Image (cartoon, rainbow, N blue to C red; front, side):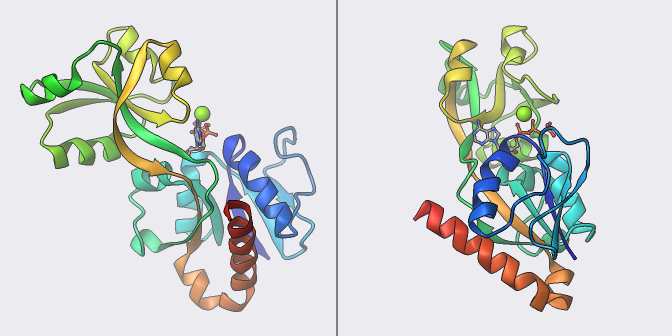
Length: 219
Ligand code: ATP
Ligand code: MG
């Protein structure tokens, strides 16, 4: 049995059509089911439902051989190619967005950076943000949040945020604007490295089917 770690919400919604095209359908509605382990129409594959940020951990420790996680989650987890027992073979091309620095409309970010001002930045992505600003030589105090990052500048908690942006409508609704891209984001299929060696024959057909389906979708 192969186990695939998925999170409810956007990842599940956007990956489900890909899985369907690969001939894999969950036997229960993930969103409404209270079950955390869900069988699929393929008797060799089951889905475990975990928090988005826990997907790399399940795959890293081999509790799931496969997982789907956003690049944002992988960057924050520190999962580079070959690191931490994870292997990232496929960009699924779904759940696309950008990880960005955003500030209140009217805040002169470029000038603040030029002056060497120390910025207060609120984000869920503390590690990724730290690396981003360090590489640019921008001085920041990072404030860890778990959600609703857009509120932080409005409430006076921070000067800027680092958050996911798709259309920019949520930012705009909160009088914010993105001023810098940290990374382009999309969902990735990740694989436990040792499982890929030891159970290659079992895993490769799934990986190939999902890869084909995602190519058909983005192509
Ligand atoms: P949790 O519920 O565990 O706190 P979460 O709120 O980050 O996790 P989702 O909002 O479902 O969970 O996001 C899961 C993933 O979907 C993100 O890690 C990101 O890769 C992607 N994602 C999030 N927001 C967007 C968006 N606006 N457009 C496209 N992809 C997105
Ligand atoms: Mg969310």
